Image 1 (cartoon, helix red, strand yellow):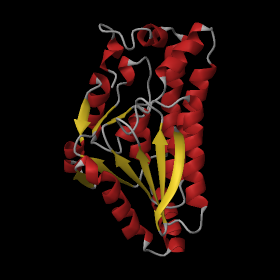
Image 2: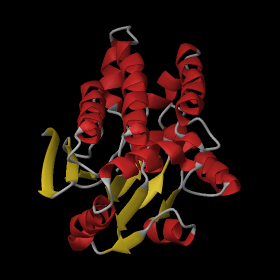
Image 3: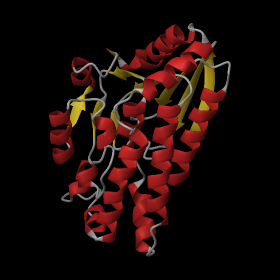
Length: 257
């Protein structure tokens, strides 16, 4: 349980997230993930990083129960920690010194969109689904990253409805490189990483910095802007009201994975 790093092939590091049962990360998990990705990118022997996960899905976002416990005790420490932790993890993927390939299976929700949306390439299993159920969970955010995966109007519709899209649909939009059976996901992602890793490491680092430098959106600043409205929703009480229904049969959070 937690975040681990392996090196299955020369020049390739695989950072694996494992927080059962659904990879809804607690505050410390986001920081662990950020640290692991940054460390892999700093390693001069690593030319490409694969971001993967164990269990039922790639990522289910933040640990809502952790937020609920903190709120019940009258604090906002978990909310602040989750927001900062997510920002660090998303930035670590985007700012990783070498390309990052996301290997996505099952559900990729909330914070998962932040991770996959900031990756350089995505390989997905044929059962993968992507979405932002934030409005059903008393939160906002990661529209910045969903907008990197789908066109603007589709992003808005998905955001407002909390609907998901399949890996095949994202491949049609050009944001997923390849869709494969689940049993082949890890190998396929590593194969792509190996192809990238065969390039000169120094030149790859320059290429990553150059591509980030011409990005039309400052993803860190854009996401932090969104998070301001998450705080407003919490201070206004609407977030707690919605979060209290999370996981109930009739509440808006009933669609949890």
